[in-house]
Image (tube, rainbow, N blue to C red; front, side):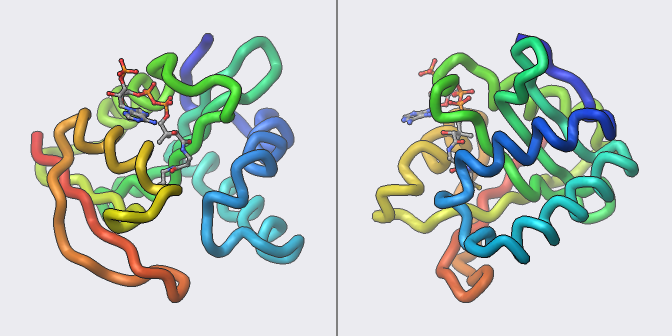
Length: 148
Ligand SMILES: CC(C)(COP(=O)(O)OP(=O)(O)OC[C@H]1O[C@@H](n2cnc3c(N)ncnc32)[C@H](O)[C@@H]1OP(=O)(O)O)[C@@H](O)C(=O)NCCC(=O)NCCS
């Protein structure tokens, strides 16, 4: 498994992976939303704010982050490849690309939602702590905050 900052040639493979996990993400329900997301991913790639995991040519993990907002914006691993520390290794690489010191924030499912079990356990394992309860795309979510 190879982890690296994503290049434009990886965009098609990236979106094939997103297609497998789109049901876990509010806001990716329609073709229009996926087309808009593809453009978003392209922008993140061009800014050096996209990390992907690959097994040969197949994209198995995807992570988007914002240096300016110090946020982890999107994280998913192919369901067939989970619990192999792919997400953990992608977050480690993200940290090398995040300039300066300070907190890093991510929003994820609130407690008690089945879809959020893996993500919440994952962020806690990496040392993120629970933060504010907020909303995203009309869904209730919770911030998790990481301090170096
Ligand atoms: C959350 C997600 C990205 C984790 O990816 P992953 O590559 O399987 O995670 P890792 O293998 O790096 O996990 C590292 C550690 O996190 C914890 N963890 C990860 N998934 C877990 C789960 N389902 N249950 C309990 N703990 C879990 C474990 O401590 C794990 O270490 P271990 O396997 O040695 O016990 C993946 O489950 C996913 O894509 N979920 C759907 C999308 C999603 O929820 N994204 C985040 C929304 S913000």
